[in-house]
Image (cartoon, rainbow, N blue to C red; front, side):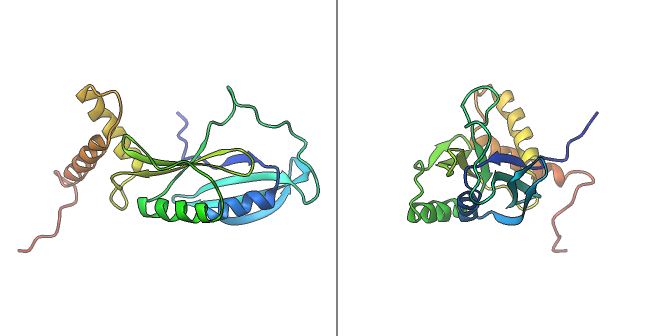
Amino acid sequence: MLQAQGVGYTAIIVRSLRDSMDFYQRLGLVPVYVEPNRDDPESLCALMYCGGNDSFIMLVGPAEGARVAIAEAQPGVGSMQYLSFNVSRDTMAEIWHAMSTAGVSGSEEIVRGYERLVFLEDPNGVLITLTAWNTEPPAGMPRALILVRAAAIRERDGAAYVEDSHIQQAIAEIIRDSRGPGGPRPPSNN
């Protein structure tokens, strides 16, 4: 069976590469490179580093003075609903303040289950979600591992949604299991 190693990048077609790069840089993304689009010499590609475990987005837009020769996006099946960036709770507060100061409108912080969300719109109308967990995972503990365990706890509890209590319980169980037979043990004072 094929085993993906993660999402390579999300490609977003943009009206203005410069405006879009500025927007995403204000969210903390870092430009890696800008080069001609190998599939369309009239446009450019900008790879932006999102942080974390090699997370990227690719902005595809017209060269300066040119126009995108692709139809405007229409919501519906086959379109992207939103692009979500994981951030810490502290970072979310900082970004929210910086974006508000820069005149970028967004939603108020929404608490939903185990997440806190802020919705923004990029210059191309792409809905951006900044997502922070109410309970931050311990350093080095993969979110996927926590979510799989939390989903099992939710099912066992008969709950409709994964809630923060499920995340907290999952983290506690993962830590406990890692200290079980053959797992790492905390240092001893003896």
